[in-house]
Length: 83
Length: 166
Image 1 (cartoon, rainbow over the protein chains, first blue to last red):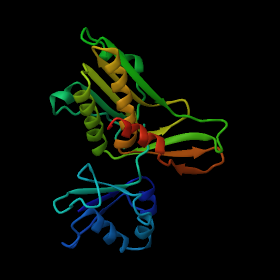
Image 2: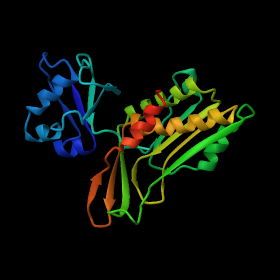
Image 3: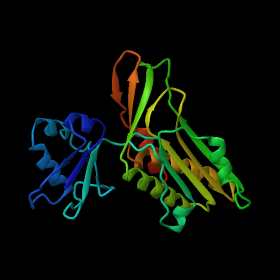
Image 4: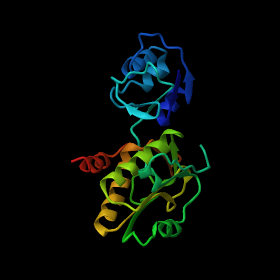
């Protein structure tokens, strides 16, 4: 599965994307965040502010309960500031 | 970041929307002219510009806009389709620039054309209010002191967008 990072999340993690093989029990956005936080200090730091990081599953905004089983692309990013 | 602009035409409502994400500047006058038609009694628009307030704690020297290619265009189209479902529009336009911009330069253009003034004005306000909270753009500021920072979201922007859901 392809995971993308944007803005300060990308800077903190040090990568704009990762190809990940997720274990089957990682079935929701929230479970993926927990799994990513266990990958190392950069991920843990990037996701440390609970509730700050936003997510999109296949280009649609998604909450922590959203399923990710069939997703092709998941993105994490800070709250948007365009306009 | 893609310099090329793209348009998506999937639904009848989306057909009347002109959506662009681009590094290049836009010509607001030409964009307004595109929306003119006998059915459009009025056209309302908003232009967002890079602000550098001399009285601010840190003077902004440049603004860099990052976005999520692929999702951005879909999110903008969804905003336009929502506006078209809510007001009787004869056309609407959303153009958002990305990349590095300087104070005084254009960031964003939205416009709505409708048979009636009130619908055009309301739809244009809706487009920019929703764009600020529902499209994946992020602003990064450079300062005169050599520092830089990602912009924090403003609570007022979320409130303005929420007001349209009431």
